[in-house]
Length: 460
Image (cartoon, rainbow, N blue to C red):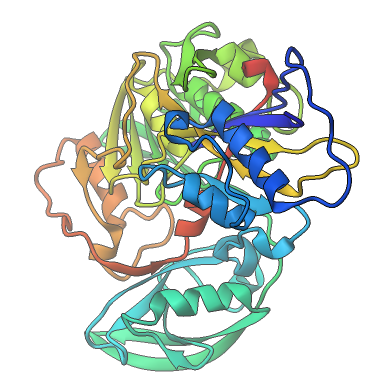
């Protein structure tokens, strides 16, 4: 096997640099790379790492392309394994939030010209979209001059991502009457998201409640996360509302750090996560000390250094949505053995599996593909996992059931309102939208499906 592989936990967890030095390496082929060689490499990799390796064929088919061959190997239960070419930028996914600075849903609205309407869910602060006046709760009825309908919503969204710019036709709603607004032009570029959109502390019925809207586990912003919790602790916070409703995941170190700041009943040797693979990969466990020691960027984090930001909480309220995924789901599940988790919103995506990232690291490289085959099932310290269909909330509320959307962190938001009602002791006295609104397109879905968290070799 001519590869140096990067293992990962996809939900989240990815493990880095796994090289089988104890295996005698075959003679490296020379000459042009054939489909047979590529497909042999793919099958060989899948036999070693794939969770469902007992269902693989014995011989690689030389006829299909690499992508078609890989797709044909996937188990019916596999929703997340992917393949792409490092030398082909078009094979890399593009995401609405990091390309145009916005995320949105297209939902049914009978009064709209096409029976549906676009609802902006998130706008990156400081982005051109924000400068043009787009905000959470803004509406639009057309993209590039084409009226949105139930049948074209998804296709238009994908066309928007593949283009260099897009024109949104804005709209306003008053008493169910839609009024067409002006057109705005968004140009595609790359945005880096600062994951903390909102942090605040307020008093609710004599309790000090901290709120944090956290939209990605990115180690480049761990210091900002730590600073937010130091402020919460200084303010004497006894309750925390953690808003992960759009969070697609990210770094396992970031998830472990967040857990350590929230849960009082853990130490550095406590188990953060467990994962189990096929007969080759076996079972593994990761402690908080280990998870904190290998961030994707920046210096290792010492558990003891988190003390100034660690809260003394008996419970945490976590707000979730359909695209809460990967490390965000891992955070929810791995907190449960150590404290009460009150989940409000919609069920999460259901990425309870782990993948490995495999690429040909020879020089010169012969195989230009990178594989990410699912490799592990994930569980918490108690061995609890199996959330393939998502983690189900204690209180099911769809934010789209109550339009217009309230600003980030606003108490009029139904998810936040429910948390505050429970904290104040009036959780059963108010009505909240329980229906699930059909999405004809969710711009956050691609990011949630593809997002991964790297777990370096030290955690193998």
